[in-house]
Image (cartoon, rainbow, N blue to C red):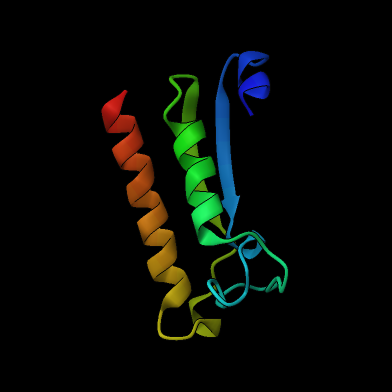
Length: 90
């Protein structure tokens, strides 16, 4: 990731929530049985958004009508909070 950041002028990060394991993010259009854990995604977000070259972050592929107990929406909100915390520390 650091090599990619170094090779580019700016970073625009989009998180497609269907990359996260379906047990943690069921409210997506294409649930992934073997997706990444939320903890791994959080670490990736922290690494990327803490860099000054990161100028944009967005989340896509959340479908509340398919969600259980708002699990996916809550995870997305927590991940957005991580971004704010990283940007605030720059």
